[in-house]
Structure formats: C-alpha cells, structure tokens
Length: 277
Ligand code: DGL
Image (cartoon, rainbow, N blue to C red; front, top):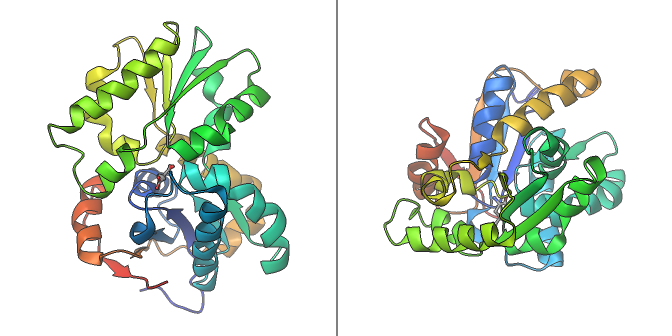
C-alpha cells in the first residue's frame, strides 16, 4: 500500500472487466504511476441502461475515485464515455473540484481512425448505448469528414464476458451473427473498431469471423499513448499523480470472481477488494 499522504493514483473506471484491457496498456506506457481501478461489476452491463442511469452510476463511481485520492480519472468504458463524460466534465467537475480531470476513450480512438482505413469505410462494434448515442459517427466526422462509419450493437457480448463465458463454444454463433451484419452494411469496410473495452476479451472469437483483409482496432494502446501525451502536455497534472508503481483494484461485485476472471485478461494476478456502494 502506498503512503496515504501522497497517494494520488490515476483512476481507471469501467462497468466491469473491460477497462482492464485499457489499464494493462496504460501501465506499460506509465510504469511509475500509481493506479486505482474500479469495476462496477455488480451493476454491469451499462450498455442497455438509459442515459440517466449510466450518468448517475458513472458519476457515483468517479466520486468514489476522487474520494480515494485520484485527481485524474479515465473512463475506460465507451458507454460511460458516450453517455456520461460530457455532463461530468461540464456540469459536475466545476462544482466538485475544477482542478480534477476526467477523460474518456472515444475521442482518442476516433482521432486516429484516419490512420487505419484506406477505403474510408469503418465499422464500429459497440454496446447498444454507445451505438445509439451516435458518438462514434459524430466524433469521427469531426476529425475525418470523409470517413463513413457503420455501426452494429452487440448487446450480449458484455454479459458473456462478465460471466466468464468468452471461450465457450456457443459464443461463436453470437459473435459471427453481429460481424456478418456489420460487414453486410458495406463491403468496403476495411477497418473495424472494437468500440467496447470488453470486446478485446473476445478477440479470438472475433478474429475467427472477420475477413482477413479487415484490420481490427482495439483501444488499449491508443488510449495509453493518448494518456501519456496528455500528461506531457499537462505537467501540472502529472506532478499531482503519485508514482510508486502501485496498482490497486476495487470491484463492486464479488472480489474472488473478479480476481479469477479479471486476472486472465490483465495478464497478472489480481487481488481486488470489494467496494460497497
Ligand atoms: N466496457 C464497456 C464499454 O466499453 C461495457 C459497457 C457495459 O457494461 O455494457 O462500453
């Protein structure tokens, strides 16, 4: 445990396990920083919840991370980034503490979208919430107006991952179904963004059904590099982040299940604590 007087980890939030795919890459870019991960597993999935629900739950979790010393929080969740980030940044932060920051995952991903596609036809797989919010088409059009975005919601994929069934045989048909629908929207799609941080946990299944010429974009490295760049551009924030190379994990769900399931994807043993909300 880090010295509590100076403990100011970077908070990383997700509805469940998905944010671990982001944290894993962030730690590679920023090995000296302290991190505090919070997975709201007890209330996942967020993808099928209303705008208000996602906003309320996300804000509650961000406040928890602030209370535990975080000055900077990354919403490592597309659904929360799509439905809660703007309100938290514009409405809540000025009242809570205008010097703290909350960042999302959609902007850094869409900024780089132009680097990957030659045909300018991109597919996005995401939760129903992310797809309905239209955040990807809107953000992509700001940076790359020439790119066409085709979306497909995959409402069962997060529950599959949350219940640890990502390698089960009967998951194949569910994964194939959505990839086929997405590809049928435009034969020119040459790039698919996995617009949900849970989906890299299904990457082996996804690769099985995506045509070989189509590039699959996961967000971990993109967000990690974006965060490193942000801290370089904001040295005042970097100075407020403590650096003892510690990583702590909180889950609103069952800590043993989180350790067992999440550890596989984080690539290292995880010892989480239960957080009661
Ligand atoms: N990892 C979250 C995302 O990126 C999943 C949201 C959910 O709980 O449905 O959207």
